[in-house]
Amino acid sequence: MFESCPANTGPVMAVEMYVTLGSRGPRVSRVGLGFWQLGSRLWGARQPDREALLAGLTSALEGGINLLDTAEVYGGGLSERLLGESLRKLDAKSEFVVVSKVAGYRASSDDILEGAKGIVGRLGFAPDVILHHWPPPIYSNLCNVVRGLEKVVVDGMASYYGLSNYGEDQITRALECARRLEPIVDQVQYSLAYRPAENKLIPMLAERGIGVMAWSPLAKGALAGVKRPQTKAQRGDRVFKAASNDRELQKALEEVASRHGVTKAIVALAWVAAKGAVPIVGWRRPVRVADAVRAASLALTGEDLALLDAASSKYLKVWGDSYKPEPISRVIYVPGILQRIFITLQGGI
Image (tube, rainbow, N blue to C red; front, side, top):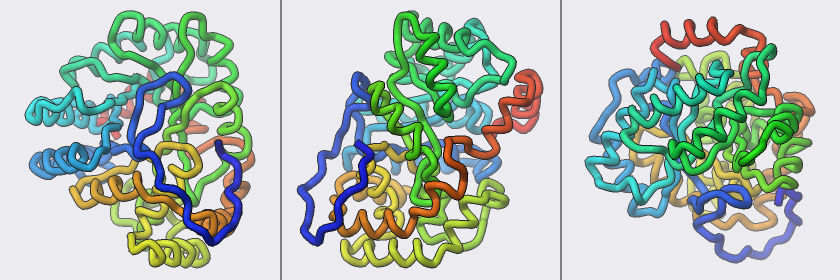
């Protein structure tokens, strides 16, 4: 599923708009919409535009995008509340597959269940998939997390469960812990400018029938052409800085975008989808939803993929051989109670 594509100049067949999430999950659009920016202080969006949200979701409905991704820590729960409110106004919950995430500082079965109850309450319905947002503190028993996630599904608070930001060793351990149900997906950082997951993690997930959702598929906007950081989320992000200053990669994106008459953002998203992952693109303006719709149906040629692969090959190793995204890989060394206090005092992330 993640093998390199051969270089050729001929067009490829039109792509299927929908894929199965993992080997046993729901059918979802090849590109999903992320709601981190909805109410997030890091994106300067504490006062979200409700009308833009409704317009964007309407465009998603019309364009066939059905995967929506949020989390309890996004805006301290504001993202979930606004998303649930909007779907009720549109009477469209049944049209979407909604994914939410319990915080990584939740490390016990009971705490996982408590987090899931909060998600259901804020959304106003049970999401289709619940993920554990990041691995628990290093001293925790990972099996307790898996037990909690299994019970979330058994108790009807989600139809499936998955993980997020889990690397090779953590995935292996989680699968050893699973008794009744296995995770259907791992959501990881993955883009043209951040490719370490391809080395070991993604092949491992493919062998176990676990799907891949990709967060930050545009490197926080750098692969869409944003040159200077405009928000706290972008400032200090090494991947954003590397991608925005990478002339070779930007030139390759421009060349492919010109061939297809689309934007660089659409090409970057289509590349992730062509690799077999489902990119989750953040947005605040409906025009970004239109990009997601176009990317979900864009068929890149073998020549396109070979050019992009070559221009981004350095990012297979420059960030490390294994999947250890910053700062998440360091957060596991912080006690869960301190993580919770910090995120709560900040009003979420």
